Amino acid sequence: MAASAAQVAGMIGEAFVDVPTAVWLVEDPVERVAAVGGQFALVVEHALAHGGVLTSGRDDALEGALVWFDRTKDEPPIPDYDARLRAACGRHYEAFAELDRIMDEQHPAEPHLYVALVGVRADARGRGIAADLFRDIHKRLDESGTAAYLEAVSPRTAALYASLGYRPHGEPFPIGAGGPPLYPMWRPAGG
Image 1 (cartoon, one colour):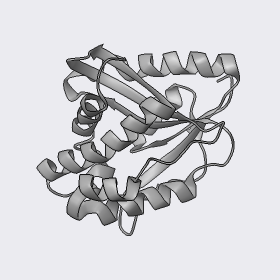
Image 2 (spheres, rainbow, N blue to C red):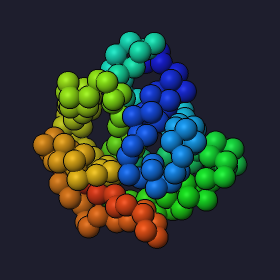
Image 3 (cartoon, one colour):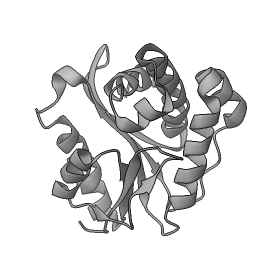
Image 4 (tube, rainbow, N blue to C red):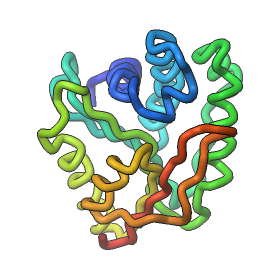
């Protein structure tokens, strides 16, 4: 993949502009794109070193991306994450740190591939881009006998992931006091 972490994170950040989780984290849409994209840049950069990033489209015109981590083995933490998250998210740092804490508490302990981020540019949706990205990663998972886990951000995305073999993995959990739920989903090894 030749696209930079910033390009991938920026595209996914823009794709998340209306996602309930992002709206809850940052009310102002301009600040939201910057803060979410900043946090995503840290995640994507780490995935490039300790996981993987699949993209669709040209590097100068990304249409979609899937960011994952291999949780079948130990993974080092993101270096200086707290300080870097504070710098990336500014006054919204506390909300992002709380989201991270809640997601970590809910994360399954079983070995799996963690699909951390999936995004498709708004003008490219409806063309099967996300399904194609998943098809590539699922082929690898099925060959290695590895399960996958993700958190859907809405009932609509949960339905998409269900069509790709993911099933609920516990009850939906809120991202904070009054925040929208995330829908934990699991795809067993071999689909």
